[in-house]
Length: 393
Image (cartoon, rainbow, N blue to C red; front, side, top):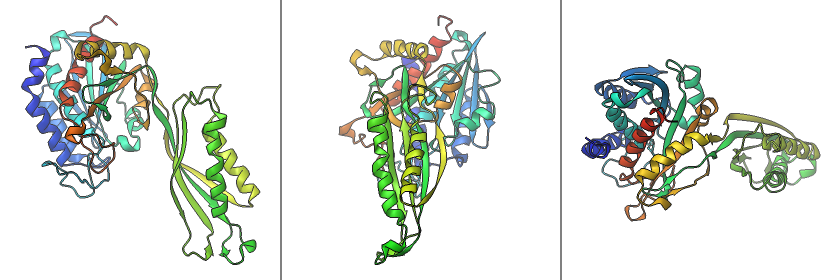
C-alpha cells in the first residue's frame, strides 16, 4: 500500500486522536493523561517506548539496517486559556485550552510513527519519536540534560508547527534563523514613595520607568542593523495603589526577541544594551533597579542541508510549487535547543482557512486549525524520515 493510501485509511483515526487531545488539554509538566495515551498508542504500534521525565515519551523505530538516527519531535502541552470556540470537541477543562496546535502535532507524529513502524524494511537507521512536555516554558533543554539525544545518539532533528497565519497546504521553510531567540525579563525600578502634591520629596519610579520604555526602543531602531530583527516589548506594568500616592517601585515585564545568533561579534547584544540604558536612566533619576530573566533561549537556526531534504520532499507533495514559501516569525520555540546540538529543520505547515474560521492567531481563545492540514503533516514526517535515512544525504 502506498503512503498516501495508508494515511487515507487512518484519517478518521488521525482526527479522533487530535480531537481527544483537544478536549482534554493539560498544562506543561501536567500532561499525565496525554502521556499515557501516547505511550499506549506507540506500544500498540510495535515500537520500543520509554518515559523521559514524568510526562515525556520517546518511541524508537529501529530499521532493518544500521545507520543514522533521526529525531522527529512533537510538543504536548496546552495553555492557560479559557476556550471560546463552539467546537463539539472543545476543552472540558476550565481555563485550559490547546490554543497553539500541539494537539495536532501529537496526532500527526503518532500516526506517522504507526505507518513508519510498518516500513522497517525501508529504514536504514533509527527514527526517534519525541513527545515533549512543557514547550511553552522551554523544557527542551531539560530533556536534553536527561539524555533525549542519546541512546541511540541523534544525528539530526525535524519538527513541524501548524500555522494559521499560512493557508492550508502551504509549507513555510528556509535555512538560517526562522524563529526568534528570546529573553523574558522582569525589571523592578525602585524610587522613594510620597505624596503627589510634594513630588520634590520623592523619587518617582513611574517617571523613571516611562523614560526607560521610550529610550530602549532606540536599540532596535538605531543600534542594530534592521536586517537583523530585534523587538523589545513591554507586556505588563504594575505600580501604585492610589492616584495621589507616588509608589515605591514599578515592575515592568516583557520580552527581548532577536532573529540572529547572540554570539555574532558583529551584532550588538540587545540584552547588554538594555541594561546599560536602564542603568544610565536610573542613575539620572536617582533611582535603583533590579533585572531578572525568568528564562531565555536562542533563535531557531535551520541547517541548510536538512532544509534541502524537507524542501525536496515538499516539492513532491505540494501540487502548487508556489505554496512552498520562506517563512520567518518572531515567536519563540524551544526546538532551538535541539538545533544547537544537531543539524535540524523546523518548518511551518499552513492550517489557516477563513471560511472554516481557522484564521485566528495562536494563543487566541477562539484558536482552531484546519484539520485538512493533518494528513499533509503526517506525509511530510514520513517522507522526510525515509529520505534522510535513505543514505543518499
